[in-house]
Amino acid sequence: QGQLVESGGGSVQAGGSLRLSCTTTGNYFRTSIMAWYRQAPGKSRDMVAMITRGGDTTNYADSVKGRFTISRDNAKNTVDLQMNSLKPEDTAVYYCNVYRATNRNYWGQGTQVTVSA
Image (cartoon, rainbow, N blue to C red; front, top):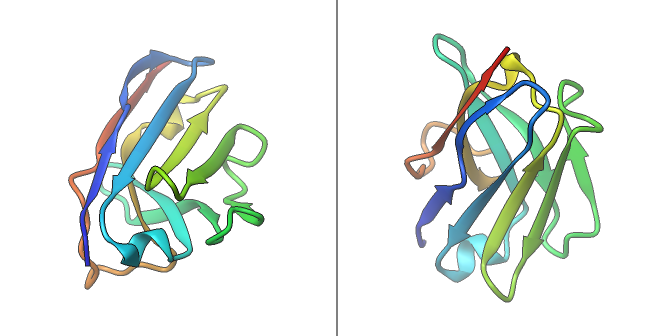
């Protein structure tokens, strides 16, 4: 099936930006609709953005619309998430995976994003 490795997280002040990157291996992820998810402490893991196989269609959670941009490079097997105008409520561990992934799917280790006020 392949692996998922998320990177690019860190600590920023509110209003700042971060760019997350997800490196995938294997054809399964490269040919799948992909998404970024996040999980804050004590909360469920929620999808924040998705992108179709060819990258022509994207969709975002209302909470990040206009601030986050998802993109992918199938030649490099990467799925990125550009996050601008970050807010403290964006603080979470961020994961990438296939669209509509569940707890039964394999998950990578995620990358921590911390936004201070």
